[in-house]
Image (tube, rainbow, N blue to C red; front, side, top):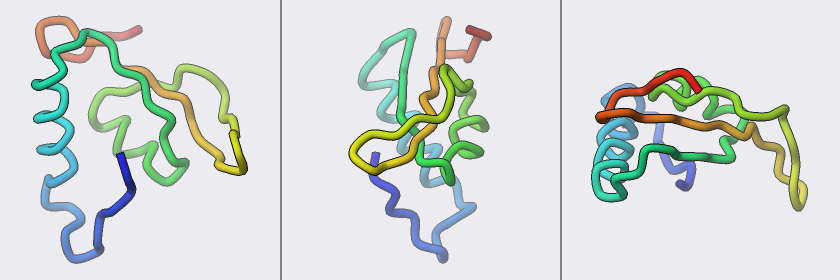
Length: 77
């Protein structure tokens, strides 16, 4: 996902609604992301956990994260 949240739209649940829609469409039990360091708190609120140490690729620093679902609820990995 691109980091497109404008200040006036932050805190209104837009990211959560987008994520819930995407997850419902994909229907997987396991999701992985390379989260921007600044986005880690948002992903944690969605139930993601750090999967590996912070890494970088092509000059971009990211936190690998994973979300394991069971019946549409986050479970500990």
